[in-house]
Image (cartoon, rainbow, N blue to C red; front, side, top):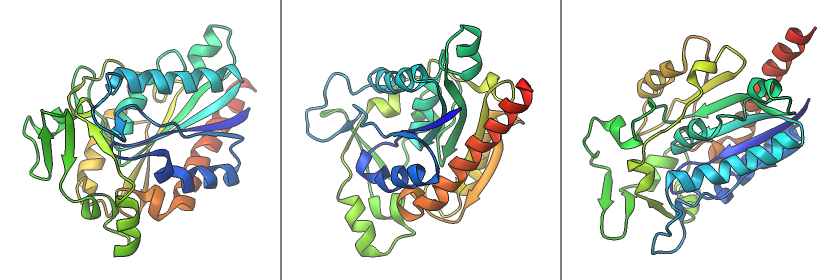
Length: 262
């Protein structure tokens, strides 16, 4: 079982924000680590037509197809909005689904870090009870979603210089991240051929610990819970610790699969 990891990033963020984590995942033992840019992470206006959840889903499914066809056992790491996107993208690529179809490889574990877990048929914006939080602002004119304070929202656990460095690399967020509905999710498979871990960021300033724990319940009773004492963007503040959680997740799935085939 050749291990591979796929990073599914959060809104406003680019692969550069996850580069340290990608490097740590390689060092941990993952043979192939993918860290794609999402269409909804808009570097230059106007917002392109593909900057919708369907466009992001196509990117992730293409990466999953490449990894699975290479017979990799895949662990997905998804962060923030990436939780919605990962859930929306995996149908047909789960290890058990691929095996039943006589195909190699597939997703064995999903690690959700400070991630949105929402019911199928709802949008990320619905998580706020139909009201836009005061720290978010919708710009209907250019089709983007703005966050009021990158420093506190994302990097409150970092010193000012480090926080400003990473905030300066953030880009526009397509409004579709907030409005498009989730059309598919793997929740019913968790504990039945798919493993899932929710990694709680204890210092998260916006998605506080109880909110993360409440969202994790949608993953079912067979989910695993992990905790890390950092802010929302732990992949920046503690990449090696996050990589350790992801590697342990893969190892637990490997042990389960080897046991079931013994």
